Length: 89
Image (tube, rainbow, N blue to C red; front, side):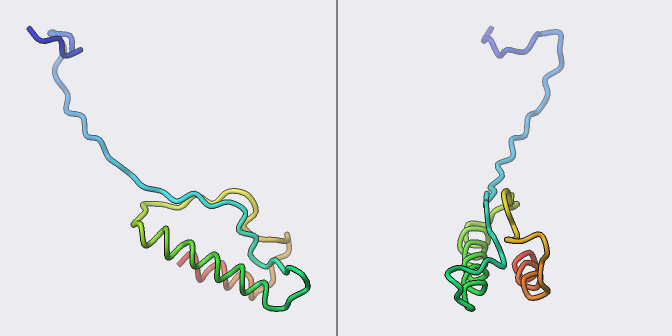
């Protein structure tokens, strides 16, 4: 008898393996202003959307894990919150 790893007195169970794909993102820093450039918060937003579209949607991931700083500051301005919601939708 072939050794299957199942004790003969135990019923055989089906095992279903599910493969899931996920995207891990860290330190998005939405709302960050670099080098005192007024357009830099928009640059961070564009990068955020680009990553989601290219790797999240483009690779058909099942879920996204966001670690680190999602917002640059504790107090989030409405425009920055709009950027966040646009990407999360």
